[in-house]
Length: 213
Image 1 (cartoon, rainbow, N blue to C red):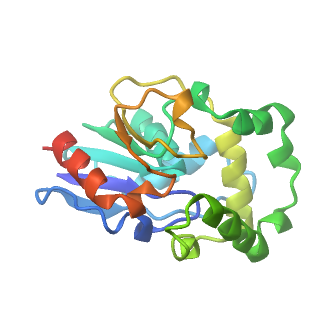
Image 2 (cartoon, helix red, strand yellow):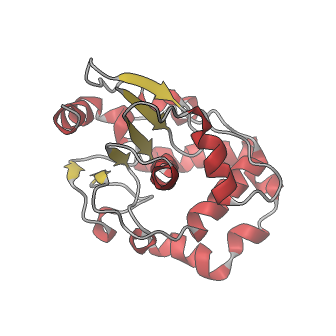
Image 3 (tube, one colour):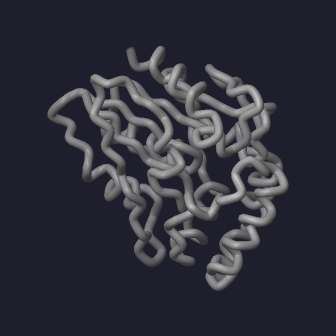
């Protein structure tokens, strides 16, 4: 069986490369696409889902923003299992900071230039304060197209979704992007920051082994 995987916002497979998936599964990464100008989220999801072969059973796994994307994909191409890492199951689990962006519409009016490489470097510096064990955070942050980044931040803040009980959620208890206090995850990674797939791969691998057996 195949597991189609979508990584975090701006991230490629490297943030997940230390995770050991069950040997009987074929892992297929779905790379981020650059959104078309003013592209609706639903249309973007359809394009992201084109790689998925529905002629055979499959599962979906998404990390961070990828967790939101795979839940949307699951609506149009239902999977046997949906697992999200460091992500949320509904808009009710958004942090107050993300909700502020939703209510004020600030992400919409931010200039695209704000999402250039200088901003990425600043983000790296800030994240080191919260996750000092991962000083090379930019090695995961590979998709840096400014329009893609701005568009993605908008979609996270605007996202509306009713929780699907079948979705399996794994969260770190020190995640500041999607704080655990707003969710009731199926599994908790002790000491896990938002980068727990990279910093706690053994714990994640064990959980996935139990989920996907």
